[in-house]
Length: 616
Ligand code: G6P
Image 1 (tube, protein in one colour):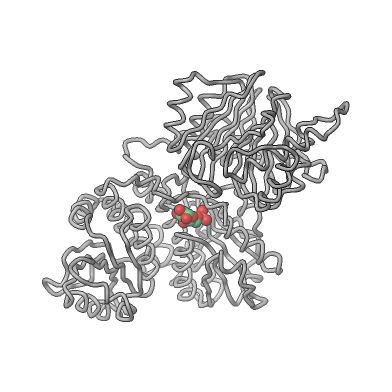
Image 2: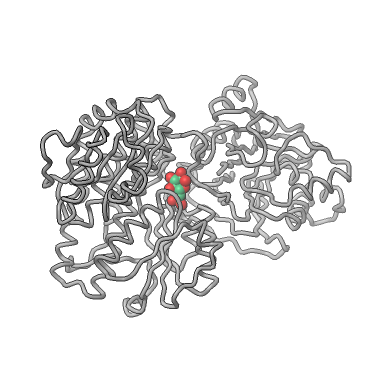
């Protein structure tokens, strides 16, 4: 939540900051701001609405500078107004800063500073930090060899409770920036005679592949040539420079109208990338390079707890079905936000697995830290290489799905579901799954990208169906067994991008409540696969029809329906049971996407949402 971008170096900052902010808009987009600094006063612009509004104002006023900080906001404290947008400046005008996170003790800090004569012009928690730094700066004596700017930021942070990623400028220190992190990510990109700093390395894609990830409790000071990291408690920190892939072309929309559309159509590739190099030589099982655990240790695991938020939580439910079925290991799924405070009793041989596309979701991170603190081994399935979650866990699997920019998760979800299937295969094969069953599983997995492609080829038919249903205001998504998580995911997708009320339920559970909603005005989408429970799903569809509900069905090729039972039918290929949820998810995504477009919604930036939720 909230994106930060900063620059200091040999060039002018404007184009980089505005470009970087646009790329970080997925983190929040209710207002944006920038401050440039050469030698005299800060040049600040703040605008409500999108980064484009800010860019127009920056260009109109011809603002620029050899260094600058900028911010795209997802409001926590204070309404969406220009006054509450960042940067926030201390009342003495000496410091201006951008902040991602929440200062929990900001009222106490504010009260104290008001008594000291500092004034406030916003409702934000951030302004209290700008003034607190100014307060410590005023107290700090001039000393040879000490950078008073760096010292005051560090000292101010000693009094702050809460989460922050910040970047600060000081009017007495042209050409120098100070950043700090606690709970909200901050990454420094090293250039040639220039430094970039951002909440996410995508801001400096194409510019720098050498990065330093700040850890919690660290403060960095840098000018265009050097940087120095300390802990808030003033201990020296040896920086680790890491090389990452950070290609500009990954952020190119190409011919697509929205990132969500692009990412839906990227799924065959994303799935291929999740599998690349991950099958055993005899093609009977999966292999993973980063689990950091031996098979004999994994055999000791007798329960797995999956934790996540949002769409990633649905991927956990897919994992539950697959791992219980193929590896016969009991699985529990928890919302990370619940687990972290619940103090759940876990068996000593429990493995905890967190799933997070961004690797930065605060509740998921807190859940994993809680599990680690209790001594459990924790794995992650994550897309973001080098993310906080990736760095905290004992082992895990990278998705390699490429950056996901649309706020509604699509390719990240299917790749998480695929990795869950591969994990089920791997765990199954070190237990009771036979060689031939494993080999069949691998053969099926390898066909997945092609099968997904076949489903994507039906996009015109799905668009036509979307047009028919775009004006409804309620929807039910119903599925049994491994289709239940897809029913939940379908309902989430539709509601988050098109603002249609939608609920996902196990199909049979419909009779215990949701059936009351069914009428001509509330269509139901059923997810049906062949096999022993198909007749049960058919009965549920009959129940909806009997109440005049419209029925859309996403069904595998082998499902046969009595005439007139189904209003609209989308077919997906029959395939290995482990792949069915992934295939069925594709039409669900397309349907939601086309409905949202039809309703004129801002698909990539749905109202009130942000892609990476770094506040509780
Ligand atoms: C937000 C996003 C969702 C995402 C969830 C978890 O709510 O809008 O798309 O599923 O966070 O994010 P994560 O990065 O942990 O997978």
